[in-house]
Length: 500
Image (cartoon, rainbow, N blue to C red; front, side):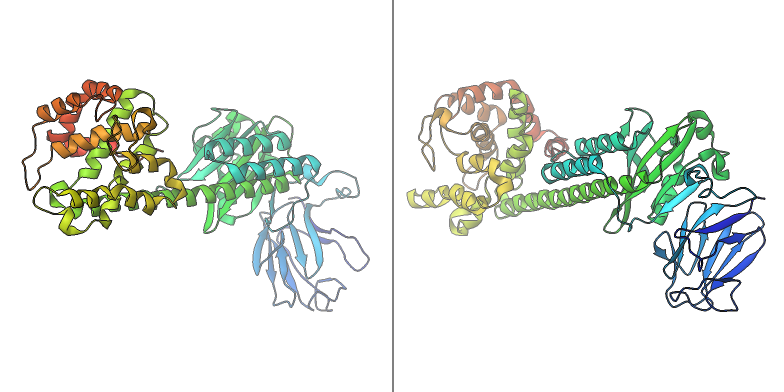
């Protein structure tokens, strides 16, 4: 069994090298009772105990010191050490290295990397980035400030990191919040692997996330934990870097890179990877906040729509039906593929202004007089004024305000005509009128779908945009099914499913 040693990072006459033989233990301190005396005031008289078991596993225990024991920059009461780890007693720092009869790595001018199996690096250590890395980090920061497509952003982060690490394979992995599974989201080269089980070093991925530290494995073949991994043998992996993506409440994923063949990662590359991992984690956290906000917002829209409809039992479900009809027309046109979510929001909120209409008018069991008609017509401007200060609803406001405008200019509130009326409002005008006609009112029964369709066609060029009526002709049967078929609620629910 090879001997191990703790080699001082800053050699000095008062800081001896600590030799470690299998099955031995030594105390370290500045007092005469210590096995290894380190003449430095930052150490306690009996500061720590270092032990090596028969299998070569090194452990360190704090013996109640004043200034603590730090492993890779993190204070520990008890910890296991690996080759390449740094351990600090007070302010005196050592590196765990391999000993023996030959010269030490430092004396022979042999890079420590050639002996290192795994190095765990504390993320709290400040990364030392060069100009190229700094430029890449700054570019990534700028993109983060303006990103609207998380998958694309993750791909760019991975590409920029790859330009620094030059790995053979790399990936950004995310934890599925529902299942806890670790899923690749960005992969280089594309299609290299589709699940974490295909990684040559999934052990490192999980250990990095559990410890919340960056890991670098310089030579996988020298680590017994990888000898039974079939994927290691298959992929020929030699060196691995893995950095956890840390969110506010713990790991949310990991950044992974490996090399095959003979080449190994240099130790400082883990620090660069940590810097990029911070960017990726921030982007993911921001995206999660956007997703949460969007879910709450969508739920609020649904609640608003139901609250509006609930005021009048005769129009229950009206907002959802109008939204579904409008989306059917938009889909049939083939022109609004990127605007479905805008149209969906407008449909759910098109009657929100009715909250400002008195019950005596809104629920009157008969036809409205002229003054009452003016009150009910005001709901479009009331709704517009309620929503106009919300920037994320800006694109939906023209349909909220304009769905009662007429093609011939005789509508309200702005008496717009023809193509001056917003396209979404022209679609919704047909949908809203169709639903009004096919819904019962206190003063009349619901019209049959066939009669409502006839009246829509009759008003082409007067109340309605002729091109929208042509769309209606093509989907009339779908309108009727959405209105009265047994599975209509389920079909409408699918149409109303939020568009991502």
